[in-house]
Amino acid sequence: MKNNDQEYGASADAIEFHYGTGNEYFATWLGKSMAYSCALWDENDPDQSLDDAQFAKIRHHIEQSRAPGQSRVLDIGCGWGTVLLPLVKQFDVKNAVGLTLSESQANWINEHPDPRVEARVESWKDHDPTAQYDSIISIGAFEHFAKLGLSADEKIAIYREFFSRCHGWLGSRGYLSLQTVAYGNSLTEDFDTFIAKEIFPETDTPKLFEIAAGCERLFEPIVIYNHRDDYRRTLRAWYSNLKANRARCVELEGEEEVARFEQYLRLMAYMFEVGGLDLYRLTLRKIDNPKQP
Image 1 (tube, helix red, strand yellow):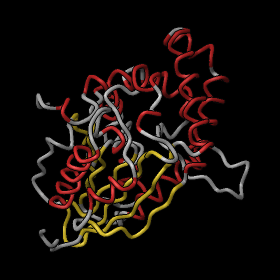
Image 2: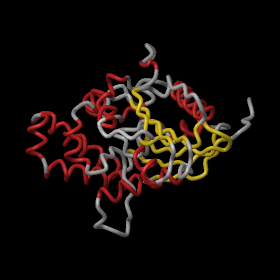
Image 3: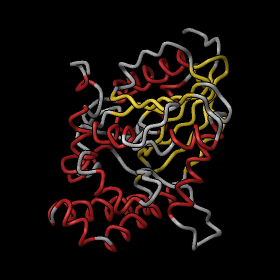
């Protein structure tokens, strides 16, 4: 990890502060998918399970990135491998590479090895592939790329570096499927201090115009969804799971930690419910020969 991580967003230490709470702890309430990002719910099915909604999200990003049957696919912010394993086991991808800053998550993936899957404890800023990728997926990582206190121009510069790197890694007209939390009807000063200090340190979410400016003339937006109610429903499902398994969670991590997560899940669900936060799913296609200003 390079020494200039603090100029960007969440460092490896900040990521591990949250995700290093414990793999078993997260497994207790995330569900079988171990997906720690917004699910894709069927609004016409009030009885849909969390696991089914999470797999619908995974399928969405795999299909939107045009990954099925491809040779090499990159997952930036791969978590516990919830996209990597379906890529190779169900969608006939020959090699899936995942990047995470969490040693705990990488260890989880390596405890369930598959020769077609490679998990790296590595930032996108340091990634240097030996061959191009056919598709790129990034779910729930983009919101950690910039930290609080940066100007819009500084954030856009970081996002543009990210999109520039993805542009170079992809083959001709390759697709990037991106999911990120973003500011909705709120301002930077509305970023909750509890979330900033106790849950996701060194993190600031993007605004939609910052994402657009970052990918301008590098990627063509094909589809943009705002599924903020999906995240409200996901957070409520996680909260219900945590409450149902509270005794075990306290046994694993202690009362203070569990109470902290309960507060976090309730607060975030409220922010998505009232529109303070949005949840964007974007399908982006590489522009092969971007014009230079």
